[in-house]
Image (cartoon, rainbow, N blue to C red; front, side, top):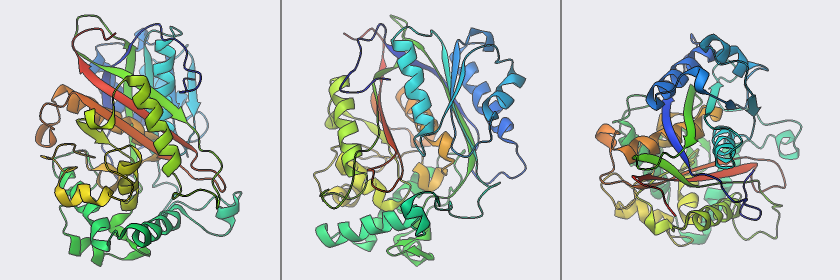
Length: 392
């Protein structure tokens, strides 16, 4: 596993050769396998490879039943190869991608499939239940509460307003209008967002991502010299460190910041070089904190990106053109690979009405959490670039 501390020398440059997703939303009549079939079939066709061409599969899922990967893949003829299932909270899908990329870079495998899948409507009617085996879970502290506390602290420190928080949802719902796979595609006003039911003060219902059913997939293989492909400039996975009263920032900030720094250093780029970003906006405050942590804005000034239109379509650095988790939906295991698909489509110029003009360099950021006393379960950052040649 590659990290910024012990990154081994890469034998080859990995490329995302094909991507695919299912529709996202509450799909109670569909089996998890059916969601996987659609995503994987599209990814394989996009990459121009057959099941027999694959050397290994990494699958990310959080609540999937034992054997969910093999149960879905055997019907597609994807058998007799390593199939590895990983769980890393919301970053499970991107963890699968990271492992696929690392395996290709180190020459362990040639052609690898990364899949993320989650069927949440079978298990939850609304919010995900707190984990009772965790200290915070036993107190009933669910993630909406944790993010609400972050929002309250940010409002106290930096003057972020309720309207600023709602503006994240307004922007991302506007982006999702152009995404025919998104769960919610209706535009909303700040007033409508603030008027929706209060979930955890100051976060209203429309500032919280919906549960969803969905799957996403990507085919990773070595970059072919002289061809225009989406190559992986860097992929970094980190788990959170200890987080307690000594930490100056809200939960998750340090983990996101440190993972971004490592990813940019490995890629040889900086945040100002990015053309488009897909980040983990499970709650509106999450996008504001993340844009600061990855360096798009100074600490405490993330809301200014919304006010100026900097992160909206048509702005200098659009964030979550897919609609993000808030509008596309958040089937946990599939989210990171859905973000990867979106950035891949953006860099190829295939994003339709939500296309970011001239996008060449994009970032995928997925944050998974949380566990009491730890600054997030995991964070994955992947820097992707459209290129026509082999980079140095």
